[in-house]
Image 1: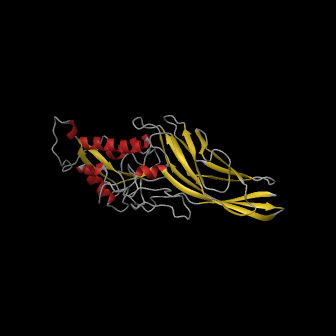
Image 2: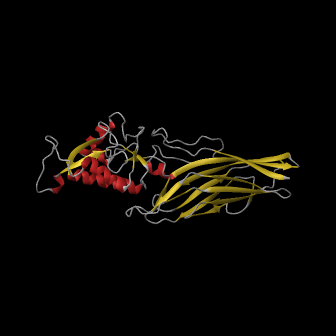
Length: 339
């Protein structure tokens, strides 16, 4: 006599696949009240930290090879990583089980685990064995360990084991989405995100502060109106953060020391007594991205001479964006600079 288990995971929620502002809630029968409530419109912070999915699990009770009962339930997962900490608590709801035939009295234990640098423990009503039947809610409580220069990625493995007197045991195991924790930005500190989730500077419904910089905003919009619409929210060519070495190379290629303003490039009054009005070469796509440098030809890249204070302001905006949302080299993002 034995317990055999089948499980079919539902796809993780991709909140911004179509880059619309409406929040998307997974549609599935029997989901818990208030499950995965999302803001409308969606924000970069939520998209980088929130995940929702469920797993349908069925336990077959067999005696001498013959099916004598089934117990079916759904495990609902709602996860909120933390942009400012490497600890988070995942909410897990085990639905009321549908019991058919001789499937009563199945003792169930929940065992989460994760890889190196990560610890996770079952909490709440899932911390101890329970009998399948009534719905119950618990947690998977995570703690990550990271140090500067050593970001770590992992995912959580969830295991449910089942026992019934007189039967051999069974189990169901599955893994969640990959998350990453880092301590790369001194100002914002350590935190965790889903690295493949897209970000928008400033957000889907808010213009970037760069849009209000006269020269830089104009240069971004000029390129984003061109054929590839590089970096424009929803385009097929998002921006990708580059390594420091690549960013340095990009600057030399496009705005290197031999690049000088041409007649008509200076469109503002240069004040010799004001350092911030000195001419500064601005490039888009940004040097800090793999799309920068000579990766593309005009009109899918452009430079514009702007007051130095504009370039300094832009640098602060980009650094803040990268730090706040833990955007590391290889992460993709868009810039909302207006039409």
